[in-house]
Image 1 (spheres, rainbow, N blue to C red):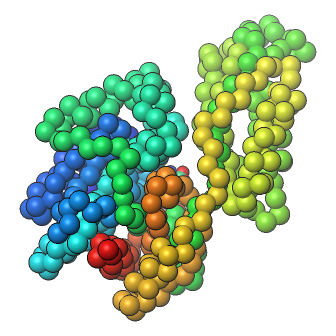
Image 2: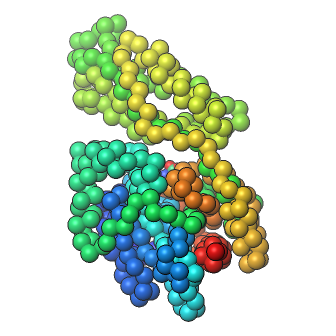
Length: 397
Ligand code: HGY
Ligand code: MN
Ligand code: MN
């Protein structure tokens, strides 16, 4: 609740976008909270932020936990922030119980998980894991034209004393705690979700090009109206993705018009596509048809489709899932297996070490919404299962 002061919105949510002044202030708060815990703070060239508890074998590969503290523009208080603070809570509990882990344990706040200010998302974790290179993300611009490079410099300059740690450091394991952002745990009265995997996601930017014209004098028959072309294409794509099982998730969340003036026929319509599906073959097939469907239905306007990110469905290793399930059982907390329909940084850590996720319920499954809310007791259960899991991993040879 204190962290949510940074970027607090009148409706009770947060607008704490990647590399913003609000996120810088939130990192300062994390540093203050870590101050009394004898943790080493560090960052890396991708702007990720780490708090490290040294283990008795400091050279052994560390156990990493965490999530993100950047938010959607009208985000909730808990998406991402919960995982970072649950991790910090675990380190505080270990410190207070006077125990020292064998392997070092680090809490991370990944840079730009949400991908709302700078697209695509998960920039920090994908560069950390080597799935993307730093040059690939540095020139991306936000809607004010500010580059990741310059926003990153502002962030790094705000913490001049933070040491720069290597990217792609070897890790023993990664566990991320996160709110479910869906209704299943609440519906099944389970406080713990043992996440089996993350569904696939492809994001695109579609530009429909027409001709600017006078709203009063240009006859309909002669118009190349980019907005109408975009709407026809979007309608056709909705049809393409409509399935009885309601598994395909097709979202157009953003659209920009040029010149965006009431008495001018739009010359250009640029819109985003967020397409997800648990079955990678279906995701490939649907995504591969976007270009043709847009070209056909946007006529006589021109169409350019740019794919921004492609991630197929993944399954977390059984060892990670069993470890989390055993932790919950030892604590007498009922759990259930659950697929993540939302994307998470754990996707990229899964490429480089054993990764797993722990879900806790959120009310009505509401998220990416200022009304996002949780039960403190359920968050505490998640933190206890996380502590048990981190300790087990940090004790492994
Ligand atoms: O969009 C997602 O799935 C994540 O919450 N950023
Ligand atoms: Mn999240
Ligand atoms: Mn999110």
